[in-house]
Structure formats: structure tokens, C-alpha cells
Length: 87
Image (cartoon, rainbow, N blue to C red; front, top):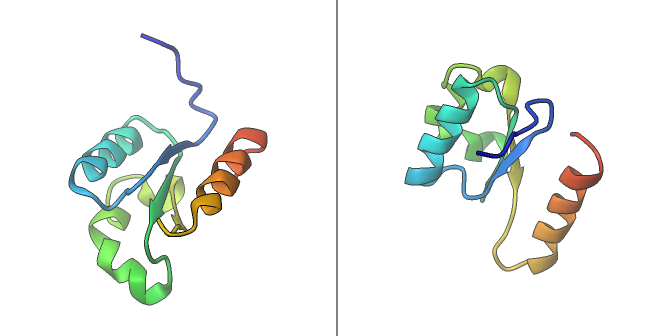
């Protein structure tokens, strides 16, 4: 198994989905910094993701980024940001 650097964030796309939610939970339990993409990260939108924000370690290690499937280049910019610098 490949070594994963725990000092760098892991991007989970569609973080509010069924499978991704379980992945986010396991990553947080192991102490990883998780950057999750969601459709709406406004204060009102984040209320829909309380099951994620209430996970152990989420307050310190979980950040949401709003993305749109319509804006193809938004994902490019997000992933470049992850690659070149830690957020």
C-alpha cells in the first residue's frame, strides 16, 4: 500500500454522498485533513451537511469547497490549488 502524507489534505469529491461520507469519516478518524467538495457551502447550505460537520475531528480537519458540475474549470482550479500549496 502506498504511503499517504498525513500533513497534506485529501480531496473528497461529492463529500456529502453516501460512499464519500463514509470515506470522510474514516479519514477524519485517522487524523487526515479533508477537503470536501459540495454543491453549496453557504451557511444555509452547510446546514444540510451537519452529519459531516458533527463527525469527530471535523471542526479541525474538514473544509468544504463549493463546486458546480457545470463549471468544468472550477475543478481544475481547485485541484491545482491542492497540488501547489496546502490550504
